[in-house]
Length: 344
Image (cartoon, rainbow, N blue to C red; front, side):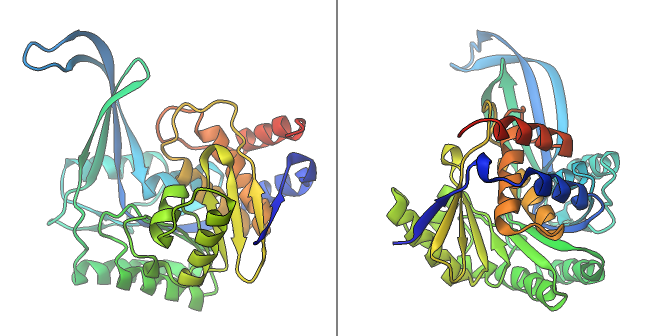
């Protein structure tokens, strides 16, 4: 069985970690993936509908946020780096809203491809008193057509030499087909760029073959590997099996409250990084934060353990916020200082 190396705050080189965060500022990251809008509708529930046994929500506020891969790009931007986003939108009102949100975040929208046959992904969450009542998804899941794929690959080809790393963000909305994903990975490898993948359990693992690092959560690791993870032995089996299946150099499995397990190709030691969260309010978007910070750290010269520590610290900050959110370098440094003083 593989050996576990538990990395605790006492083993951190905080000077190096803070230096990495500073060096990440100004890096250029290409994010490719399914994009969309997150809408949060909040209101009061004071009575039940006479038409059906459901609550009536009197709407007080509505907020639009960048969602899916666009949230990854927004996290990159919040860390002081430059984000370039390649994805597909429709020709509808949500596409207009999405472009406006990108403008407000200072993320270029010129690399998006419009497909009139698709609707722009919109996820609406109805919330009352911090309790999510329902989520409504407006989306397409059909694979993109060959003409749209060619336009997308043209955008990636234009940008690949100008960036420091590439993130593939898969929400299983039809963008990351096997041919498209493998084409982007091949381009990144030829250009000698780090390519990180946030996978989806509904997508065949072979789509991600050749990436530098994969960052699945526990459920996705189970789905991709076909191994039910119940203990250390099954975790090791799933992790090393995924490394072999996808031929990646590294694999980072996020384990919720158990932290993050880091696997390396050809290595028998699994690094386990504990969770760094003071309180958990909303886990949506945590995976986006992890891959954003981890990839930026790698692009800034961090090794895999340092990059994973920073990614886990950032996720601990993000889950304390409502909805999909970004994290600043200052917040990560504050969390680093706080947990660095604890003997956990």
